[in-house]
Length: 493
Image 1 (cartoon, rainbow, N blue to C red):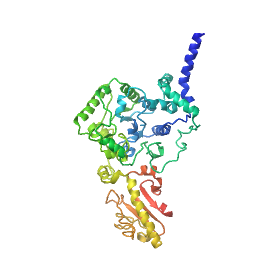
Image 2: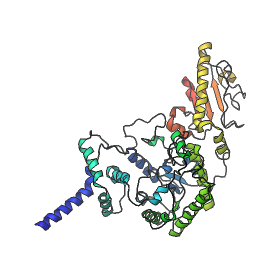
Image 3: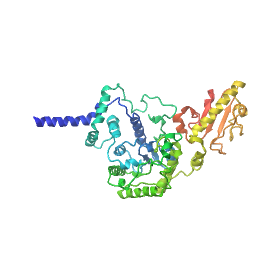
Image 4: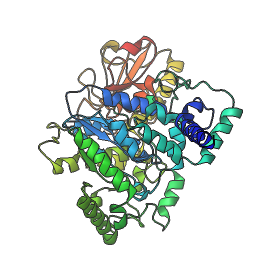
């Protein structure tokens, strides 16, 4: 009888641990509700059919915020997919998420945060998310692995979630993983990072932050203490993280794809500088030690530091300009790694690569291009409305209102005073496009018949980003190759 009771007890306990996530389903506990949404979006991107091989990025949040998919795709022959999520997740998550979803010719790039190489155990964050969400999204290798994850979770996490399940206000979360059904209205501007909305991601799954560096982060960077975890040689061999990475690499290569590690976003500051010979040599020694274990950590660490102004709110989160900088560097690194496979586009737009870095340095507060254009055009709108109040009409453009006038234009009058009558009474000066180009393709243009008007900024480099944050600023008549502001039926011009 005692043996029977013992066996029944063991089976009951095992069943409880195995099925406990289902008992906690739709838990009103405070959790990262953006995770299932992002997981679903990423899985859809990875499942897309494309003739090109895929370049898949996996990492913590330095990956989810850290690159610009448009740049990576433009300067390689790869379809880019971002699968990075959060530093708190177990590295084995990525092996299971990618299992069976890669094909021959695909490449997986992992710009892992330094702390991930040192991790020895599953985090409480991972365990909590596993109970709340992961068993809807995590493809376990076996029922045993599923049970093991549950058994490793501390009892206090079970108790906390169970208590909130029993006492919390009921909340229907059944549709949270559906992209069109999360009950949250998309914000007009990028919010503080919680929650993430997939509507703010680009088509490759990256969340770009068009903001200047946070003041608190500047204080962190100014401190003498290094804000990044050390990478001792001991972290490169015989650790749980290295074992997990080797398993991940084996799984990726079994599908015919390639796996590479690379450097995370790293700031060039006094306590962590590319000019610190000891630091850079230490990184290179770590790189060489990983190579001995069978893991390739590609790219020169000395070339992957970035100025502080390219960061946003943490030491690992690049803003939109840092993302472009990292994307260009990664594309160049891949080109050096295998020039035959990673082909740069032959025709390179001088305003998106060659001059991009110098252009950014000239702009105030690191504003995104659409922010600059919106600021300029909104000032002109105020002047135009004041002109209309005084005169009963808007300034008429050339050819009796049929021409598009601008500093450079082949569709109307070409003049520095491209809106007649505004300067100096209504505005101090008429702006020029921030690229200061002589080409008609990179200009502000104006058209008006006196009753309505439209202004546009042609060929911006970040239209997808602008559409996700201020969709009304994208010129609907030109399908994302111009920004526009207008009145009335001029919308369709």
